[in-house]
Image 1 (cartoon, helix red, strand yellow):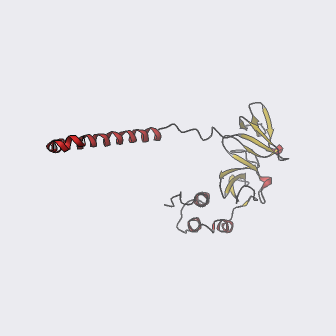
Image 2 (tube, one colour; image 1 turned 135 degrees about the vertical axis):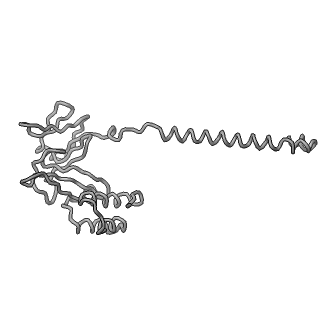
Image 3 (cartoon, rainbow, N blue to C red; image 1 turned 180 degrees about the vertical axis):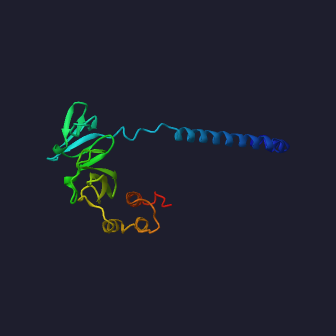
Length: 214
């Protein structure tokens, strides 16, 4: 082509518009391909987050037993218990923690301060459900206070630390090294409920930079 246009320079000027058109067409086709790939990737099926959850119970002696399914059984004239793989009955007093498809729960006997709970709504009686996990774990313990069901939150800084009752002083101590979480928790203009405020603070602390405070 170089020799051709050198020999016939007037042809170069004539073909410039065509060359530009071909170049634009190639760019457009490439752009469409990228967009299509992006859409396909965006619309790719998302795996069920519960699919990979393994059900297990941790016995009082520390041993762990794995199951395919773990279901909470409650009802009138029934003692709340877990039913593993559809046929194995597991009583609350036999275990210290369990993981089902719905949640992870720990016996309140593992807590440093917990009022005895006889409520079997979301978990076995006397067990608290983990409602936030990360650098700070949050557990929700529901119990009957003599008039109705109430909720108390417990905090655990890491998976191996003690689980203790949540207080404003403890929250400030745990999140003091994160200015965003600390400022959010101490914002007097917050109108959220206590539970939502604590969970939002823990979310900011556990995922710095990923959570909008607006």
